[in-house]
Length: 132
Image 1 (cartoon, rainbow, N blue to C red):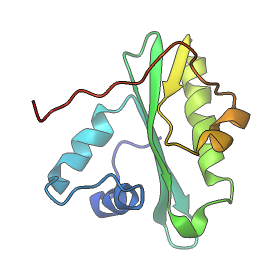
Image 2 (image 1 turned 180 degrees about the vertical axis):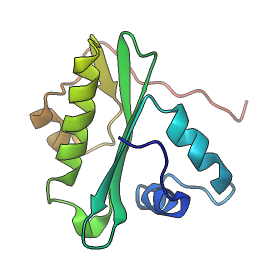
Image 3 (image 1 turned 90 degrees about the horizontal axis):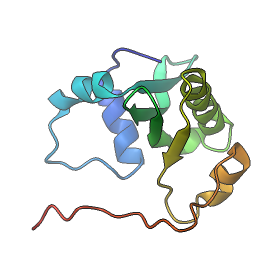
Image 4 (image 1 turned 45 degrees about the horizontal axis):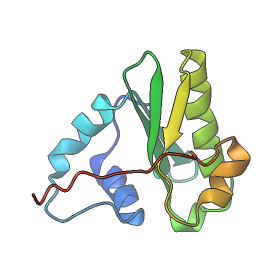
């Protein structure tokens, strides 16, 4: 877990995930990190650079939402993503969270199911339309 990280490296991770928009302000990265309940960064020990990240949004009492899990393409399929999720889950369980969820991209279930996640039958993910 970290309190801060180089904004450019975090932005590179968001770009790798397809989540960074050019109109976003890089100055918001420190607030994004500090506003997360948990924020984990995977580091390549040879370069000292961030190669993966994940975070949890939470009230700190009952529920946790894992978000923004990404590993740079050259480092994928090396176990980094699994280690990030395992660390986030461990920290959430240690705090007694009764509900830990996430929204997965289509096709990524094969990554999450072996880690203990399951489909939420009877629920439909919804997104507020900010254009209205």
